[in-house]
Picture (cartoon, chains in turn red, cyan):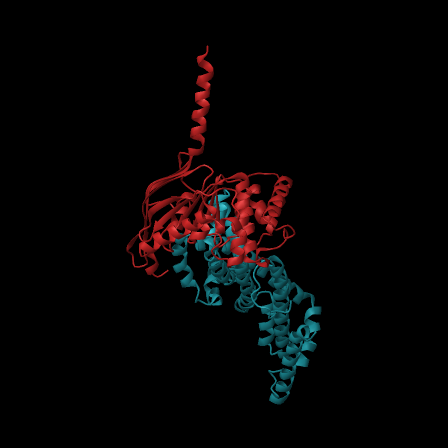
Length: 281
Length: 255
């Protein structure tokens, strides 16, 4: 009789120990070969294995042309890997699906739809009733700071605003994983900073799993729990750096934090040592 | 004010030049602009010619409508599928340089001189620009836009209808506009070759009988029809693609 409670205690402990370690995305020995225009094989990704835990914010950091976006497209199911496999919650990824929501550098909004129409598109496709989808979408538009712009067309918005719409459009269909492909790469420095802050505060509310591709060291350290450094041509994982900085993070505090500065300098130095910076961008 | 009046001033100027030129030429086969204009009410007041115009417009509408309904899906499929494109491209390249009116005699042998032959020629004339522009429009659709749709759960067919079609619409409508003008041209030429009814029939019968004022009056009427149809189409087009990037502000039509 006395054994029972301790057993269930052990089980609770086991569950607690397992939960944060639950793998959301597993990338298993993935290689990607492209044919160049000269009909030669080009190895873009070489033997990548990576596990992304549920609720983690993971950045893939590397120079342009290291295949980091390709890796994200493979997880998205947009591009099948040449070798190896990607899995989500233990199931092989065979194509795109609403459980993985992409946000692209190019925004990729539907230009014939208004801001509201863009955000409502996903929920409507999932069969959410019009009134409900509209209410949810309006709330999301407000959350990304675009209240009052619901009836604007994408062409009438600035780059930063377009990316806010794109984020809201993706969040609207509740993907379990956000796949962000250099989302702030096309924006000016000021807009970029504001969007990073806003993304972080949105993310800190519900802590979705995020895979975030960037070539900015500061951006990766500021946002992530884990930074995956990649080498160029062929893209390989060079090192994985755990970013042990407290959350919620505030930019002003973080910039003064010597730990943040050390992460940035260390990662920068590692890229320097490998001679990556000598290659043309 | 000046901008709105400009196209009408241009037409008026053309008529003045015509008037002066015909007076200077003193040639029986070149009536003055005024003589031609004076002949218009007689044509438009005549019940027979109205029946002819009706027949012309009906064939034109059928040929244009069927061509658009077939060409848009075909062009879009070609733009999104390499296999479809490489199958149809050579076929279209063979048809492209052939003047559609030159096919008329052969088509008449098969189908007679009735509505079917003429409508088919109009269909051929309209199809190519609409296919071409739909193809180009579909090809230019951003891959990431399609990926975004796929992530929302749109199937391949849904993506074609609900993303490629609207995204390519500005380009498609440019093709349709060219197609509309070509429909008018092929309509008249088909009626010139197979004279039986229609506006082209009136025009070329008058030419045979030396009624030059009627010939030129018909040219004015057909020209006005072209301008009117184009203006109407432009009005519809700008309404449909108001969301797209402004390309140029210079008005290209009377709308």
